[in-house]
Structure formats: C-alpha cells, structure tokens
Length: 501
Length: 83
Image 1 (tube, chains in turn green, cyan):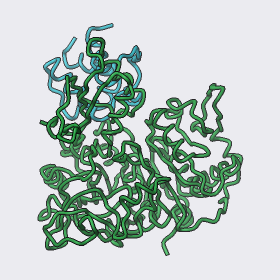
Image 2 (cartoon, helix red, strand yellow; image 1 turned 180 degrees about the vertical axis):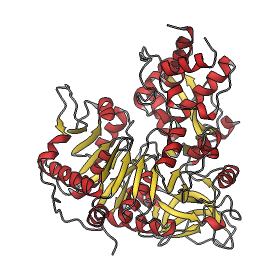
Image 3 (cartoon, helix red, strand yellow; image 1 turned 90 degrees about the horizontal axis):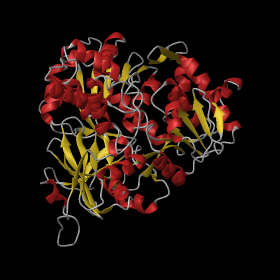
Image 4 (tube, one colour; image 1 turned 30 degrees about the vertical axis):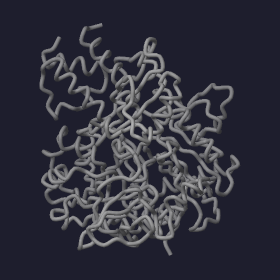
C-alpha cells in the first residue's frame, strides 16, 4: 500500500533528520525541524477545536512556513484548502462559503489583504491586527505545544485537500483529493522522473497550484530537497540561484520558459548539476520546445500533461522520444490509463479525435458539494478531462482543443464567465464577452468587449476599479473594447469566434 | 520629483494599478513585494522604457538592482544617460 501523505514528511524525518529539506533565501530547515514544527502546529489546530475532516484554508506564498502548515493540517486530520495568496476578499469569501473552513492560516501579506474575513486567522510571522470583528491566533503559540505527532487516525480514502479550479459555469469548483489520490500520483511521478534523495529542485511555481504541490510531495517522500524562490519576476535571480544551490531539477509552465529563453541569462548560463526540467500547465508551442531542447544540452526535458482532477499528472513524453514526438503530450504515467472515447464511452481508434479520458488511483473523489458537476466529468469509463485529442499508432497522445470554453493564462485555467459575471454585476455594463488574446509570454490573456448601459456617462475606469476589487490580477482583462453591440449567433448567443477576428 | 520618476509612476499606475485609484506608490518600495508587478509586468515595463527613452536594455540588466523600485529604475536610467 502507498504511504499516507503526511508519512512522506515523517519517514524522511526518521531517515534524514539533519538533512536540509528546504532552502528559502537566507533561511533553511532540516527534516527534523519541519516535522517538529508541523507537529506543534497540528497540536495548535487541535487545541483550537479542529475536528477530523474539518477544512483549513491556507493563503500563503511559498515558504518554509507554508510547507509546515500543509503537513500540519493533514496531521491534525484536517483538509487543506490552499488558495492563491493574492486572492481578493470576495474570492476568499466564496471559498469560505463553499467549503466552510473552521480556521485559516495566512502569511502576513495575505492577512493584510484579507483582514476581516469570517474565520479565525493564524498569521505568520505574528503581527498586530486591530479589526474588532476578527479573531487572531498567534503562530508562535504553537511553540509552547509538544512536538509529538497528534496521532490522529487517518485512512487512505480520506480527503487530504480541496483544490479550487475554474469551472465552465464561472464558479470555481473544489476538486477533492484523497490520500490515495495524491500518494499514488506521487509514486508515479517519482518513478518516471527518477527522483531520489540526491535531487534538489528549484521551485518557482506556487504550492497552491497542483503542479507546484506535485514538486513538494515527491521530494519529501524520497528525502530530497527544495529551493524556494518567489522572485521569478527577476528570472536572472532565479537562474543565479539554480547555479549557486546546484539544483538538479526545475519545473515551469510555458510562460516560464518563454521568459527564460527570451529575456534572461538562462540560455548563456551553464548549470552542470541540472539533471532534468519539466513543463506542464498548458501546451507549449513546438518551436519553443525545440529551442528549449537546444539550450538544455545534457539536461532531460519532460513535457507533461495533467489535470487538477488527476492529482495532477497524467502523461509525459520520455525525453528520448521528444524529438520525434514534438507536439505530443506523451504516454500515460505509471498506474494511469488514457484513452480517446466518444460521448458514450466507446473507445476510438488511433488517429480519430475524441474526449481524452483517464482512469487510475489518482482520479479525484469529485467536486466538493456538487454532484451534478461531478457527474458530468466522472463517468463509468473514467475522468473526462475536457480536452479533445487523438492518439497515434504508437500510443502517443495529442491534444487538439478544449471542449470547455476556458482561458489559459500563464499556467492557470480561468473561466471567462467568472470575469463576465463580475463585469455585469458592476451595473455599468449591458452586455459583455471575454475572450483569450494570444500572448507571447502567458499563452493568452483576457480581452474584454463591453457594451455600456449608458454610453454618455460611461467611464471605463469605473469598471476597472470594480473588477480590481473583486478579481485577482491575472483575471483582470488586459485589453478592453467599448462597442455598440455584440455579434450574435442565430441562437442569440454572443459569437465569440467573430470577436476573435 | 524628477520628470522620469513621474513618467514611470504614471505608466505603472495606468498598467498595473487597475482602475481609478489614488494609490500612492512609495519610490523606495519593492514593486514586486507590493504586488504591483509580476514577471510579465517587469517585461512590460522594460518594453516601455526601451520605447520611451530609445534605449536598449540587455537581458543581464534585468535585475532587482535596476528595476525593483521606482528609485532603482530612475538611477538605472541615469546610468544609461537618461536625465
């Protein structure tokens, strides 16, 4: 049987207590330090009334504290609901309303943004807050508690986390992942990437994002180490640290590589220790992949495909086949099966387009509190990923499009409907359509077309201000067009294809 | 306040601080840590500086010392002969 998720930390702390598990700027922590801090925090959560299967919200940028928090929540029998650290109050209110967390853990920066929300807040590092309606618990309070495991009985079919992902309905859906889901996917990842305790990965992707989390768990399971760097805004700083810290791995989404290749010292820098690089989070233009291969002489490049609903990895291209399978998402990872099916679950032959479906122990338990949406994607024949594609004669898979109308900004899925709903809510916009505009670095960015309710008094700045208060930065439309009317299809629906032209 | 500083603040407000806002940008504050700019924001800023001041910014120059705060940007431009 696979280990439970918190055992990754426990077992590595037994085998490598004094090994540095995480480096972050000037700070670092050993496995023993992390397990003790996680046990203390788990005991604090228990003392604060956390019960088995209670949800705990997390809004933190990557840090040693965020890793401690993740394992602490699981050890305390809780379910991790990690949301983007830059979430706005109204986004977080939605998450709180939806899955009713008992308590939350926040970084200082997130707490500043979210002060006044309705759940008790554990904040690190400690800071003064004066909101009379708020309830604050000092992180340091955990230091007075025992560093022993709270010894909660946890089973492998129980939930470890709920990960929110944009849904086609415009409302984010909570993907429920169990111990078995994450543990089996972690083992598969370790196996096809060949990760060992000697590996050290540079992490620039946020842990709230499943791809980021899929860097943490495999390294903790084998007793490897992570280097956290949240300053990819200056990629040269990251490249320098990859060299100085002698990392063996690096992971990015297409925009990460577009920036590294086009505007950084990466192509001119030799990192002799770099064993492998992974790319997921949307399809990368084959031309960019080819350039990356050129730059990465001697380093393996893994092109991968996955879904939040799959914990998240599904396929990879073995580096040796990358050249002749350029543009492919590869073959299934260990323990996963992928097939192309029609609407009724009938398997389609090679070369024929259909739904990309997946089965395996990594497929989610469903969407939190939403059986209807769950039923739409979990079929007796597997998970419907929402991507359309085909396989070739050798069993390599290719994506050709998306079924759902979703934008891919950076590595993140965004629902245009969520943005449109907010624009309409402003009561300034009569009709609107948001589409994806191709972008060299982010793959695509939101572009909004709006028909004002009152063109005479309409001021775009008011709409922008309204949007800013309600949506995270990456959801803000980058381009705006004020139009008199929208092109319509015969059904009366807005013709987004016409807008794209 | 220098003219360059005003131009940069105006660009940042217009592009990264969405909507009508009287947000004050502290010239010494990190634009990254304040959540005003991210990795693509830095690149947009660089494009803007290159176009506005007809200069070439090398990849090696895309470092915090040159671009992290308004003050750093202003002195970086000075080094490049823009006053």
